[in-house]
Structure formats: C-alpha cells, structure tokens
Amino acid sequence: MTRSTIELPVTAADVRIARYAAAAIALSVAEAAIPLPLPGVKPGLGNIITLMVLARWGWREAAWVALLRVFAASLVLGQFLAPGFFLSLSGALISLAVLALAQHLPARWFGPVSHSVLAAFGHFAGQLLVARLWLVPHDGIFYLLPVFAFAAVLFGTVNGLVAAYLVRHAPSRPV
Amino acid sequence: MKLAWHEWRAGFRPGDALVVAGGLLVCVVSALSLWQGGVARWAEVRAGGKVVARLSLNQPADIAVDGPLGPTRVQVEPGRARVFSDPGPRQYCVLQGWLTRAGAVAICAPNEVSLRLLGDSPAYDTLNY
Image (cartoon, rainbow over all chains, first blue to last red; front, side, top):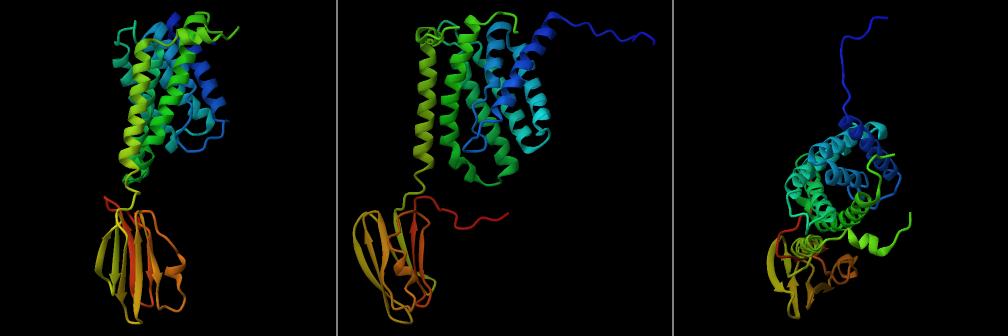
C-alpha cells in the first residue's frame, strides 16, 4: 500500500470543534424525540454547545460547531435537504450573524443568557423569513410570530442559563 | 454534581434581565398588533349582493332588511351580531346564533340576505395558490 501523499494536519482546534460538534449533534438528535406542539418551536438544545464554545473559544469555532451540527444532525435524522434542513440552516446563519455582534456586548453586563436569547430571536427570524419566502407564500405565517417570539425568550433563557452553568463548571476538555 | 439555585443565578448578569425583558416586550407588542385583526368592529348586511347597512358593533341596533321572501331581522349588540329572524325555510342563518369574530358570516340564502363581521383589516375568507 502506498502512503498517502496528502497530509491533513489535525490541530488542537480541529479536535476541539469535532468533540463539541459531536455533543451538539447528540443533543439535537435526542431533542428530535421530544414531541412538540407546533412545527418550528423546539428547545434547540444543540445551541447550548454553540454558546459554550462561543464563551470559551470565540465566534469562529462556535460557527464551525453550529454549522457542523446543522448538517450532521439533519443527515442523522434523514432531514438533509428537506424543508426542515433549510429552516435550520437559515436560522443558524442568522443567529450566528447575531452572535457575531452580540459577543461584543460588555461581558460584565451581558452573559450567555443574553447571547442565547438574541440568537434565539435571530434563529426564528431566519426560519420565518425562509418559511415566508418559500414554504408559506402568504402572510398568515406572521400570525404565529408572538408564539415563536415567546418560545425564543423561554428556550433562549433556559439554554443560556445551562450554557452559563457549563462554562463555569464543565471541564475544559469535553468528555 | 449538585445543582444549587445560586449556582444558576450566578450565570445571570444584569444586562441579561434587560434582554429577556426586551424579548417579552416583543412578544406582547407583536401579540397585540397581530392578534387584533380577529376582533370584529363592524357588521355588514347585504341584500341581493348589495351592502344595505354597515353597523358599528359598539352600540346595539336592530334592523330589518327586505328580501324576496320578506323581512330578515338583524340584531347587533356590543361586540356581536346575529340574524334574529328570517323567512327562509331552513333557518340556517338564525341557528348560527351570535357571530363574534371578524370574518364570520351568516348567510340566509333563500332570502338573499347575508350578515358579515369585519375587523379593522380585511380578513381572508379563502386562500389559494
């Protein structure tokens, strides 16, 4: 057997991203088993990991983890390239854009809970936008906006508190 | 790992309360502005396809509209309206009782009279694409 001529050096950051992404994917898959009253409203437990990575390692690695989660979780769940995948992807992209701005808020006053709630709003805005433009071509979908907004506040706060807890207590190397 | 309340509270910073409050405000404002459309404000009465009366639901009213079979009586009370009596044979529009939501319609087909509630913004009665 000839030795491969392609060298793919694995950095410490790569290993870290892979580990965090694996944890996020596991949470997303576990969450898919929870019955939900309304399509589009879900806790988004995988985002806890994104927030944790953001707090510890910065936005770039958080973006890697979030996008790997969207792609891999949809593959595992058989949702890849289905409408749900595009909703997840647009939500993740918008919420990453929001986090890119939100991370510059003064850390003394704004922690993971703020990041989480703001990102949750970004997430549902992204989803709603794609849903409106593509899946539901009339404005009836905005009738559900208050429901989505409330879910964003509720789950955003809970996820943010969990992320804040993990940032302070979890070992820096994910198991 | 012991879960203590103060451990969780420690992750909550002052600005976070501001963000959560802002988020709740968005919920309330959007609910108030988007879910008002369902509140009926006007009752529109048609006979033979033409609008013969447009009554505010703020005050009680009682009108009679003439159709081919005879008079249909429409009654309005604050926030609701109904067809009180109709000369039609099956009385469907009367049996519908009080209408309260915008977009609700009671049609007395034999007498060609209809009662419809309207909100501030036009509601859809059908959608297709």
